[in-house]
Image 1 (cartoon, helix red, strand yellow):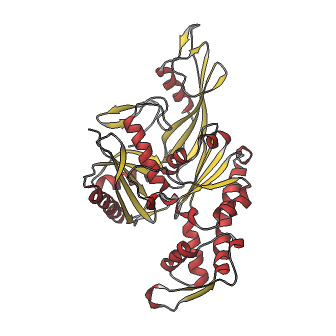
Image 2 (cartoon, rainbow, N blue to C red; image 1 turned 90 degrees about the vertical axis):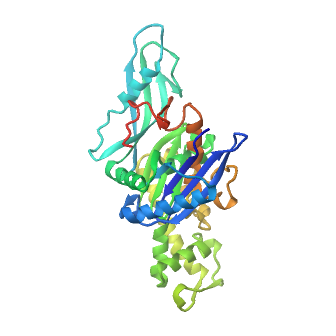
Image 3 (cartoon, one colour; image 1 turned 60 degrees about the vertical axis):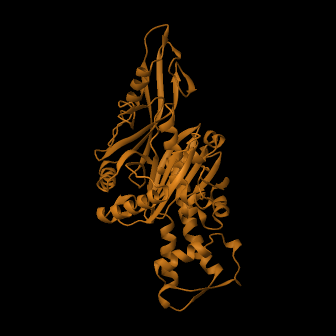
Amino acid sequence: MRDKIVAVDIGASKVVTVIGDYDLDDEFEIIGIGVSKSKGFNSGVVVNMEDLSISIKESILKAEEMAQVSVDSVFLSITGNHISGINSIGKINVEGKKHFITEEEVVKVHDAANTLSIPFDKSVLNIISQEYIVDNQGGISNPVGLSVRRILESKVHIITVSETILKNLLTVVRTSGYGVKDRFVGALIAAEDILKEDEKMLGSLFIDIGSDTLDIIFYVNGYPYYTKVFNIASNYITSDISKVFRISMRDAEKIKKSYGCCYLPFCDDNDILDISLDGGFKNLRISRTDLCKVIGARMEEILSIIYADLVKADIINKLEGSVVLSGGGSLINGIEELAKTIFNKSIRLGFPNKINGLSNDYLSPEYSVVISMINYAKSIEKFDKRNLLYGYSQVKENGVLGTVKKIFKSIL
């Protein structure tokens, strides 16, 4: 019998746990979901181990109670601006006129690609194959078994993280009583799951807008090419509403979710909102247009920062496909129209792919990361095959997902 698959997504606003299992017909389904308020975690960094541990336990416990199972270990998402992506090329000479590429040689060419100088406080989380080049013939996704006369090259995208930040997060999860099967950059897994194949080929941007971090993943030619995380996200909008209208952050968050709009043409000056506030305070009366101006100004700034970063990184001209918006911050009304004015590309919201047993309440961009994670974890648990993070090969070690160690330097 297969182990149950558990994914945990830790954010600044909430911790979400999803449990999946196979039914008697060997069909995968969601059997438990737990959501708790997150404490002790800001911008991808553990700031209070005890508070975060309580949040993690509460989320997992809720999922366990719904699923009527016990959780031992989890697949964990990570975020934060300590995450970065670097492109690199490795090259090895292969001798012999009638030589066929072996897995060992693919390990060697990955080693050759992983010779970049990385800051002392950073570690390699994943090395993602973009393409292989055999005797100057590119566009190869799996070179094992192909004939080669002289040179094997590998283009890769290397994900690096702060070793200290990641170790602290892993420590909290483990001291909470749970093992960590593996850890992913959550937005990267969501992009892999949600972007369409033609979008990945053309050159498309995936934007995951969380409460206090914003992740961007740029795909081209089928694979990730650029990864970056910003510490500016939807909490900035909540803070602006709070300051402008002199209300609590809690009321501001409620107003943002219930009445928020960031595209001025959608708002009417004559539409007056009469909003009750917590704590017995006098109702807030504001025009929807005034609220939209506050939200729109900040959202325009956020999207413009992304655009400017793509220009600086010389990527904007490669953006020939779509811009896909996901995460809870993408649910603000008018965001697609506003993004269109900035990027001048096809814009759409990114929804997680449906899984049996999953309530429609969770088929929302707000849950894209954790739902995509369990989809991805299911695929790497079930099959021994090539996939995004594990290159051409993977192995199971003592029942726990392992990798070809010379390729992937783990700090688990």
